[in-house]
Image (tube, rainbow over all chains, first blue to last red; front, side, top):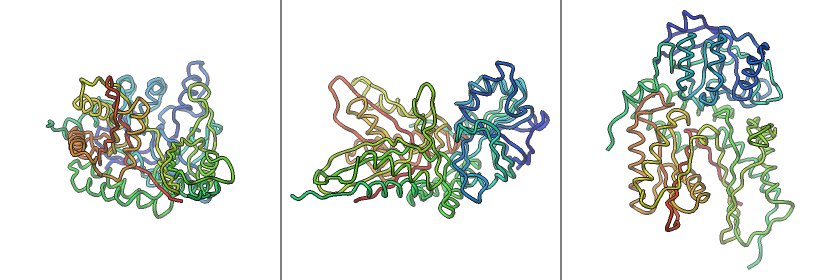
Length: 184
Length: 283
């Protein structure tokens, strides 16, 4: 079990390997489809993003509404491939980590190798469990998008697994290779 | 035969209750199936993931916080006895109102956008519901809710195969679709397969297949054997929990069939994640 602090440095990113079980603590940003489209549009116009992206970890998540007296609603990951069209540009601009679920495609992996970024898998559907790792939750942009708003989250011991690393390691591919059997 | 009158307000109330309980109360047989998966899983990472899923289900039941943040599109199946008549207002509106109230009061996520391909503005109340209505004999109203998340739904598909493709063609289509999906639909998955009917009927068969009791079999022995083979082949893929490798990729495969045209062999696969959320009520 590795303990990692967000935002991330290149050293930390390079030290992480596919299959590592990690607990992330620190500040991460939740953003998904609609927010990514807006952020990439801003970058293409040379305008500033709603937060400084250098070193940051983005968590692909749209939590359910927060109940009174609680910090966040149910907060599991959404499927990452939908952000694949946007991720390479963000990585090129300093994004160091992404948390989501499901496999990333080639252009994202290439950007991860080239600019040093890492992709973590959180357990899809474990929304109530993951919510316990969130200590504070603040909307920092696009409140009108409802569940798709950008949120700054302080997390403590958020359990994730390194799914694809900056050296080409890929737990999705390795997993199938190791546990796949011929059929019939 | 005297008509039986049902108030639409009762429909609203029942729909609201179903939406609420579906979000935090996963079925006992689903939990049992995941525990069995934990027992047979060989991948340490896979075991970790299944343990987290079980712990999550426990927390969700205890706190009534939704088990998954994607509290889903409300799909409502109405089975209306032909001796029933409704009073009090528009039946479909009563269903939408039940969804509106359930998702609002229980702090469930509002995950529906209005125009799908252009502006995509959130409707803010998780309506409309998708409503499928069937008229049956009798004087009862059965309401079934399937709270369907987007991730698994996105991995589904329909293929208009040729009769010459046969059952082997259906097998190839289902397996290719599941392998291509990999970790995206949150394995361990439940797979609904529709075979026959027309283009839209086939897709509906696949969705209805997901509503069956977990692990139940098709009444025809040949299709029952096909369900078993598909499950074995999917679990031989090595995809595993969350696609990160393992032996437990699917918990069940259910096949529904219907007669079809002499020129066609429609086949559909509707994938469900492990958070299979179905609730029903009878009025």
